[in-house]
Length: 327
Image (cartoon, rainbow, N blue to C red; front, side):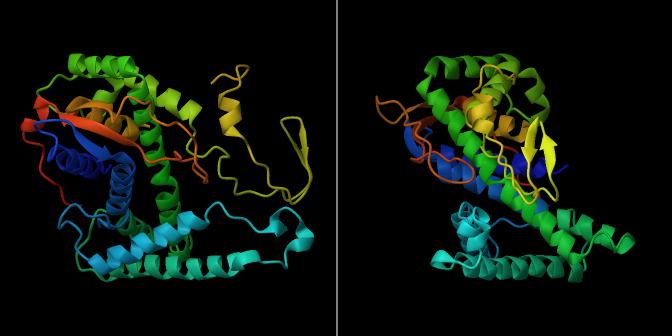
């Protein structure tokens, strides 16, 4: 489902990158490109709209600006906490006005998502977006698919399905640039299994075992959500894995440490995006120094420094990419 949207957005990205790299290597800043890619895919699936522009592709600039501002504010506040979350006696303290800011942000998000739902509800045309399908379910099961539930489902998709994928792509590319022999091996697999006559597609992923291993290794070493985004609080005293958990306690699971523990054993869209970039471009580091692999601060463990690299379009980019598809 929504394969056409994912394919179309990948092609948009490839075209954008190839404009200045057809003849020689050109410098690209990949963090912002990966972020735009993931947000446009998710929002086209959810509402049929692109909010991050490739030229004149954004239909409503004001609406897109509002969305980008909300997202920027949401991620800026995502990792913050109130002292009362650690010491209940301090719940009344609100340093820096965090609670007030979050309340205001919540109202902005609610109003924006309500607008998207109302627009679809009042539209005379039936679409194929997530909101269209949820409104259809609301008609048959109104008690289960209220507007509030629909807004929460949309919000989960946006917050959990965008920055996580973009971060994983950036870490994977950083590792490949620091290990050019592995990059060469991944490209050789793509040329052998897919060739240079057509772009790889999602059904091709199952033939690309080495590429799958690259993404698996990246997710193990650099989990997009290292503390697994805890959202549950123990309602009563309980025992989990031999550990006693008191009532009203939130447990944080350190996936970063678990994945690196030798005693512990150890995404298809990310694979197609990663593979398309390797298939369509030659890559090298911006200079002789290795890519900085320092980890930044945040809920999704981003790179401390945005990834910059040099790319040059391969012959396959001279072939016509498939045309854009409408939602």
